[in-house]
Image (cartoon, rainbow, N blue to C red):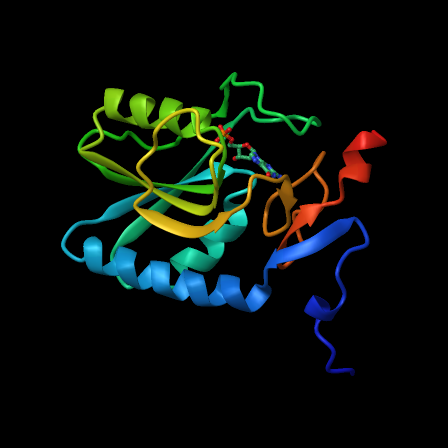
Length: 189
Ligand code: 5GP
């Protein structure tokens, strides 16, 4: 058995790494502590936005000491392209009613903000008592909608990133770090 870890090898399609596996681990501990403090006296429903946030939700919830339940929603996003269409469509809805619930939406990345703006409105319309946002990545200067992110993982430059749940045409989600996808990958597509 060898002791080398996967982080030593950066995928050849990744131009440069922005957030390491260790930085993700550390930040999830900090975010988990903050969420546990804030929801110490009320149960929180964590809504992960599929597919990308599944990795973030999985790690984050293992750091929580407060009472929580988890549900997932799938909305349309970029498809195989790398630019936002601005169109939000529900592909898989929640399994639980939101009436009176304290909801924390967990998103992989906040880009234009169109997805979260839609979800916040939608959840409040369904009677949620509160709706807060945890975003693993916030892209600097990319927001077209003002979104108040209560739990922010990393602020990254406005470049197309992959890894830790984030894909390009369904690939690269399993990379344990977040990195900039080499533009030649989508320029050649
Ligand atoms: P928004 O609605 O904020 O523009 O976009 C949110 C969704 O777009 C994210 O959940 C993600 O699926 C996708 N997205 C936005 N920026 C990136 C990026 O840099 N990399 C990847 N892989 N997906 C992104």
